[in-house]
Image (tube, rainbow, N blue to C red; front, side):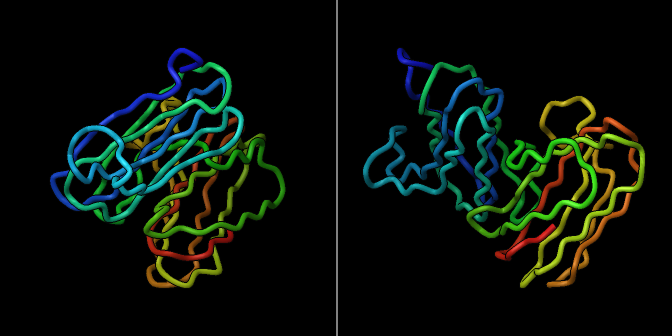
Amino acid sequence: MGSSDTSDLYSFSLASTQDVNQALTGLSSDADVRLYQDANNNGVIDSGDPLIGSSTYGSNHDEAINAGSQAAGNYLVQVYQYSGDTKYDLRLSATNDYAPSNILPAEVEVGNLSGTRNFSDWVGTTDTADVYHLIVNSTGTFTLNMTGLSSDADVRLIRDTNSNSAVEPGEVIGISQAGGSSNESITASLTAGTTLLRSISTAAIPIIT
């Protein structure tokens, strides 16, 4: 994508109500992504097509949209240039209503993890998952606490062993599903250098991890 190709359009359909997850990764310059409902089913973006979500991080940051409870029908994904030329990888998936997203863009880059780190965010119908990417720099015990919930949210600890930014069998090494607005926590023994991602999903809440 660049000056001679500033926008790409992809289409897909849902047979039933599902959550839509999309990740734009592998960027070397700034590109963004939007999700539309194709209201008149003509395969192009019109003024009457509802904008479901957008992701506009700066620079070459991964982009992500996680839209909950999307009705059966046709949808359009627009990847567009903001600045510079870049190749990109676009991943799309549909999961059952409020099931965890199975794609892992690095929405928050934690980097090398040492000591205690605190983050505050939220998830809900318009953003059903947040992903934190971190690297463990020494062997030890990892502890995650998610507090401040006003409704139900869950948390997973994932080792992306093949670095393909997708959750595959055997890669979930910790999960907390306490239910309601109860605090969530995970404790796990981790080896140095392990690359991990955390995925959070369900219900509209503030999050502190």
